[in-house]
Image 1: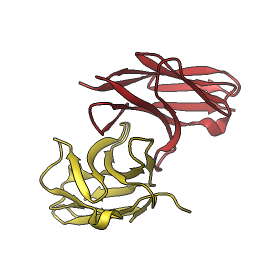
Image 2: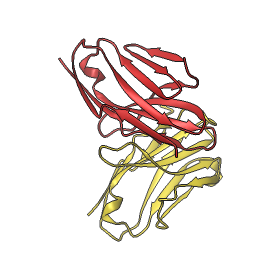
Image 3: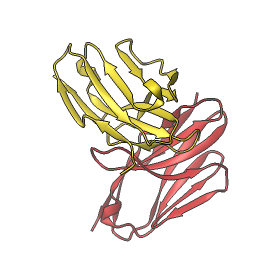
Image 4: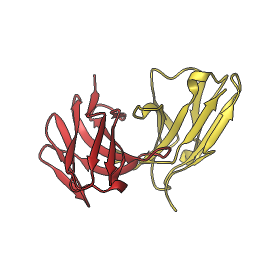
Length: 110
Length: 112
């Protein structure tokens, strides 16, 4: 069964303290892995798509990487405005659904 | 703004009433998805349309839920005889084929 597990559930960082969020996945065949940011009470905001192992994408302080079993979202020198829940989703080649993890709630303290 | 829009943003209803939500996707997107999200959880797939055809429904989707996408444009999600367990955020997303989904702001449903 296709499955996505994110860790940690919650992460508190000091401003400027870099860290990584993990997304482990089990899927019959990966069509794509997606990262989203979600602020409280809002819909998820698209960040990155990764299609194959070894691929990397960057945007400002965020960098997403992909292996055959997991993806990492690296946050470099975070700022308080990076505080949000970060969601990972996978889409299998055998279907059309996106399977979401439960997210990592990130808090960046000034 | 050409993003995904949803209406209403908030809905409070009494148990047993019917409710209907609307989603307007990004105009050039042919795929439209409905999700439900509860606190502390990721979005849970409900159903998916390609153009006007409803191609997939979650096995967890109760018969009280129905969705339509007439003419392949906007979509509606109706919940009949609402229950307290239906209280959640209902999210709509659209995409172009298999590419990334773009989400609307959601409709927050509270069943009292």
